[in-house]
Length: 101
Image (cartoon, rainbow, N blue to C red; front, side, top):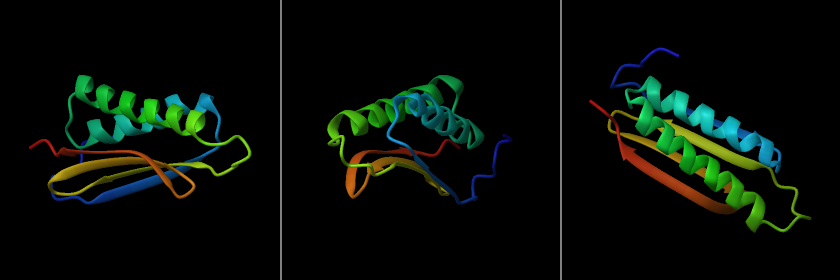
């Protein structure tokens, strides 16, 4: 993934089954998008780790009979990078970081 311009708005969301094996995939997608907009590798990995942990919290904190998928949303604007994890109608985690210049 190549670095995008600082004025680019880009949003991406994905739905995952409630299965822990997808936590690393959600984190990897987050890291790739963060690096594409200019975050360094270490900071992108920190953001990805937070999203992966939230994914695990979604699995642990949602009743097993609730088959709602886990939603991971990533959005970048001219000024911020935002990421969130939800399960059904329940927000699990959200983070917002200033976009690197």
